[in-house]
Length: 271
Image (cartoon, rainbow, N blue to C red; front, side):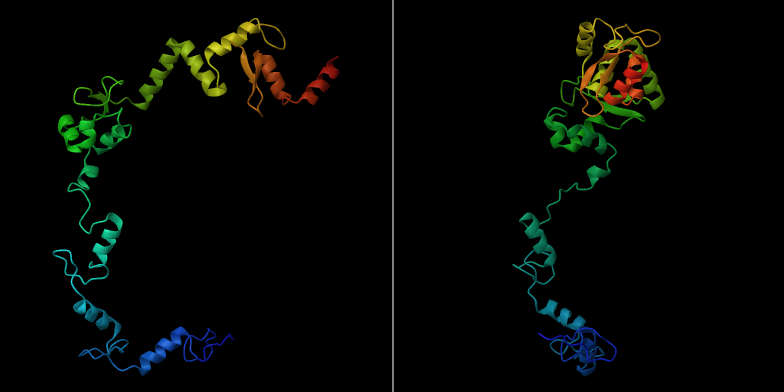
């Protein structure tokens, strides 16, 4: 098929019909078309002797009314107007599918607390409240300022006899509490640090320390100075734990980049 340009001067667009591009063809039709048959309308007729606007209006008057009671729109498909047809495709029914309290729950001050506790069903909230937000609201009433909803017994779901409003703690007070807790629970604090940083428990650390005779794996000396615990040495590439070292040895191989060649040259250098 040969390419043909629009015959309008200096257009250059491909021809659409009668040697003109789409834009110039529409202009030609508007010039040649008869005026709209509707009184006092000066637009060009496009379909059935009417302009586009009056043609669409005429289609609405000719169309059968939507089969949904109370709807005055014309039928688009399967006996429904456009709105009810789309609703039918999505939900299987043209009727409104939203709950009667749609929007009111999300706007309620207690909804965030309700949603937070409900997400862990069935362990986090009783079925009575999970199924009825307004029963939850009626039982709790108004939330006091700077308070959060908590369970009295964390082993049981939130329910009519297992809830309380607990005063919120400021970030500064939480930090003080955390420092005090670490001071009073050094073993649990150490266990938490080891699990977070190296993936081992305090019991595994103590077994490694016992196997090394409570001494550094390199210098064979116990930790001295302000560092009272042996450091966990691990490969930074694989993450594999190699052993326990004193602070000086651990820092030393780190400064030498854990490189075997550098370490061997260092041995030759000092020997």
